[in-house]
Structures are given as C-alpha cells and as structure tokens.
Amino acid sequence: MSDEDRVKICKRRSNGETFQLIARDFAVGSQQVAFICRNWGPENGYPYAKKERPRKAKVRQRRPKIDLIGFENDHGIVVDVAETGYWLVDCKHCNRQHSQATKEIKSNAYTRVCPNFKHSSWSGLTRKDRDLRRNYGINEEQYQALRREQEKRCAICGAEEQTDGKRLSVDHDHASNKVRGLLCAKCNHAIGLFDDDPNRIEAAIGYLVTSMEKSQS
Image (tube, rainbow, N blue to C red):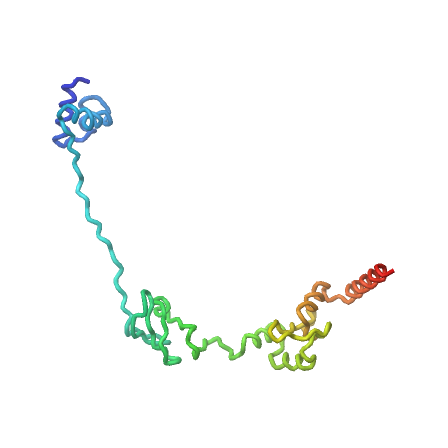
C-alpha cells in the first residue's frame, strides 16, 4: 500500500468513517486500517483523534424506604427504629419493648424474647415431662416417684445419681414399651448392647469368671 493511500485512509478516518467502511474501498482488513490510523498516521503528521462515545449516566434504583412506625400486628405495635433493619415493638403480651426485624414484623412472627407469650401449640408441660410422656408413657411425677423408690441410685450397679451430672436414664422393655426402672448411663448402654438378652449377659458373666480364675491360677 502506497503512502498516498495511507493518507487517504487517515483523512477519511478523521471525518468519522469507520474502519470497516474504509477497508472495503482499499481491499484490506479493518485491523490494518486501524493500525495505519493509530500508528502510521501520527508518525507522519496525521494525528489520530479517538472519538469518545457519550456514556449514559447510570441511574441507581434505590429500594423505597420502609417506614413501619405505627404498624401493628397480633403481637405488638412498632414505635421506633432500633437499628438498620430492626424496629422497637411495644409487646402486647408483656408490655415491654423488643427489637424485631422487618421480615418478622411483616410476617406476624412473635419474638422468643417475650417471657409471657405462649404459642398456640404450647401444652403447658416442661420439656422433660413432654419427652417422658412421648418416649416412655410416664410423666414427671411418676419418674420422680421411681427415682425416690430407688433412692436416686442405679437399679443395677447402685451408683448414686450425680447432682451436677446427667440424671438417671429410663430403662424400658422395647417389646412391651413398659418402664422397668432407672439406670445410670453405663448400665443402660451396656444392656442395650446385649440386646436385653439375659442369656448373652449370663454368658458374658461366665466368660469373665472363667478368665479371672485362669489368671489367678
């Protein structure tokens, strides 16, 4: 390509024509035209003026500010802002103020901080009493009576229940589901490993006795 053609290319580019349109008339690629305009042109007195495209200002869409002050649900009324995303709610159950999230207030959720609120499914039983009724068919009073009868000791080994430890476990017949007594954790676990089979337990006793006799002889 002659210098005369390169000059024509640079001039046409300065008039605003695209690289692709110029390349058609000179039977060259648009990349070669771009190279001429950006490199050969400035070196030979034909500066390349890069046209900047106008950029549209991005408009940031902000979420509308939520104001829940005065909002009321079944559990309280919003009275003030606590922190970002949280509100102070006058509780209807205890007449105190609790902090609740926006989502909780809108979904009519109660706060677990309130000491007076009881859910509709609340039975009035303690957790231990509820577990005893569900798992073994006895209540807390029956458990305590059995505990006093055994003098707070394991029905097998006689180990005393630790005041600061886990209380005695309920041992029950897996076939009839009847409660047999209270055991410490070790004894309860041990007879469970023997599948509550007296024959296996007797065999284990015989094995231990025989082993002890052999070791002493």
